[in-house]
Image 1 (cartoon, one colour):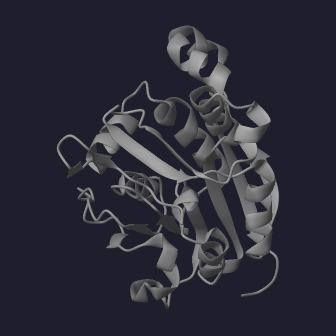
Image 2 (cartoon, helix red, strand yellow):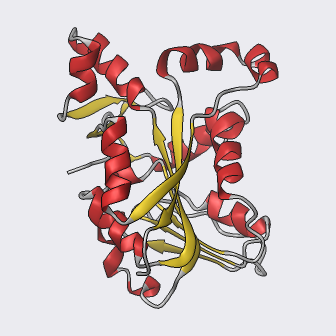
Image 3 (cartoon, helix red, strand yellow):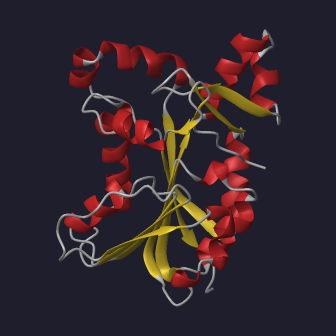
Length: 249
């Protein structure tokens, strides 16, 4: 099971709101690097329908609607959502488990131009099953965009923590637990994947990857945020995949 623990063990209070606050900072890697790269890979959203699976508080779903998407649905298990300030935006935020996407009745009659898993697919109990469920929700000409942490990051962390070789750490199938980047009292736990795992998962679910991107900071950003570049020098960052359905659903 790919499990995410977002919990402050000292207070036993769920802390997804702390994650969202950290992610929204102007100097966060999400703001500087990840979200711009994700938008570039998604392309023009004008008039499109978009499903954001594992949407967190739904802030990105709202932003996509503001950028011109005609209809946006966000799904997240936390149920801690922002409230869109513009009533004209067509945004629906649903509380549901992405591991059971096929059981979300509000989605059963919908089909989307774009389906997003932005740092969320790794938390599915069965990644292939979840992506197959997503395939049923994508139009035949639609696209799937997945963002994931580079597996190099977790291999380096595990290697240093456990005193094992980098190759052994990279190929380990055991759950990896580590302090979150937004609060060291909060532990995040999930299984890690190799690059081949990631590619094969998408393929087995009925998609063809047509582009992969590993974004990095610009020279100007490197100079402005050297601590962020130091982190990327060690852990690489994220990898993005854009995929298209292999055959009609």
